[in-house]
Length: 236
Image (cartoon, rainbow, N blue to C red; front, side, top):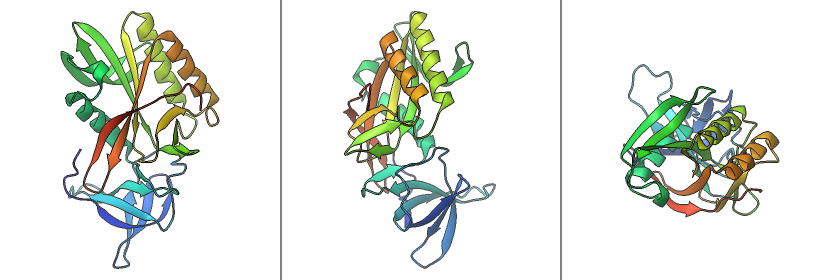
């Protein structure tokens, strides 16, 4: 996924009120950017470290800048715009990066489904059969390359897993795909130390037959691209 133009760089001053980040530019100006991440962003925030942002020319926006990439405490890069995850996965699907999800007949995004009226990220059909694909963005890194989801308690994440399990019980394929926007993560696992309920729901989903995959990203101010498969563990 190429950015429309290369991202601009500054130094992160602080993130606050969840949706705001102050970034210092080279000329000393302090720019307030939108922070498009509702999670805790644990281990992604280093005040004074390089941060990259995009700009919008939409006059209706209150903040023209959007924080896109952070420098982590280990010096790796993290794509903190969770809104990019589905676009990255869509691109990966079109490019056939996920061998288990190639040669599909149709693809739709944001389709309402399930008993709890969730919204599936992608609904594919292959040979007339549906494949329900849920995407989660991973940016929490700990312990030498271990990545975890979620980075805060996520009732929504557990609900999505329940919906996927029900699809399997109904005789369909259901897939959970971790979109890992962190250059230092090599393995992904559920964050039982943060959300034990989600971790248990994850293990239940795997046991029920939900397919789980993870894709790692190459990250630069020019582009973010899912490029490689990563292993997924049941426990961290």
